[in-house]
Amino acid sequence: MTDHVITPDPAEQQKIDTTVPHSARIWNYWLGGKDNYAVDQAAGDAYTEVFPGIVTIARSSRAFLRRNIAYLVAEAGIRQFLDVGTGLPTAQNTHEVAQGLAPEARIVYVDNDPMVLAHARTLLYSSKEGATAYIDANVTDPGRILEVAAKTLDFGRPTALILSNILGHVADHDQARSIVATLMEALPSGSYLSINDGSRGIDPVFEQAQDAYNNSGAVPYNLRSIDEITMFFEGLELVEPGVVSVTEWRPEAGEGGSGTQEVVAEHGGLARKP
Image (cartoon, rainbow, N blue to C red; front, side, top):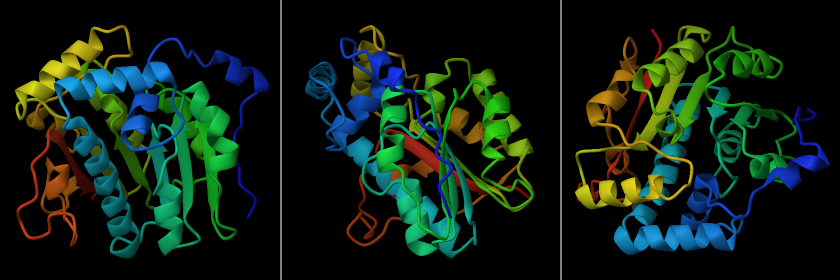
């Protein structure tokens, strides 16, 4: 099937500001990617000087997402994914994991970063049996997300909503909960919600580094308590082991599966809509 990829006008690339660090590009840098600039590397290095553990958090977050998707495809039978706030493509993106297990899987990515838009056509390819689409939209506009995503996804069928490290960019907790509720309301019974975000109350050094980053002029990212992250799953059926540090969510061999995995200040969970 032909991909339904929404690609940017060439002018989109002119909108990329390389003078201000951007969270998606810094995250890409921490993950070992190449889609970042000197300003992002400097900001990333400044962060790791205060809190070197952020690299572990970034990579543990990616591993958590991969395990979530594998569960959704192999055990829950999900074949549709709405990934909001996807960030810059790196290794083991949602479509790569999902279509690697079920080639017919359909994935819609959502982001509003011009740099992500510029990479969408070349990096977010699809299997012939499935589909991969990209929407230029902000997480704060769930109505538009749902309207455009419906061109690729059938919202009459169970769908997995993925919100990985994106809700921290919504400062108001009630607004963030409303966004999640609006998106989940449009999905049928049997759909799933996957969320992971940076958490407060675990590591004060991490919180110090994040507060310094937020005051640097970059786009702020707000850490939330574990209880606040858990609230996003209200009314849903959490998959065991519930909302935990991302390293503790069904770790595999080689990822601390012996029970000695490191607890990191990044919590998440996966839940089914009854």
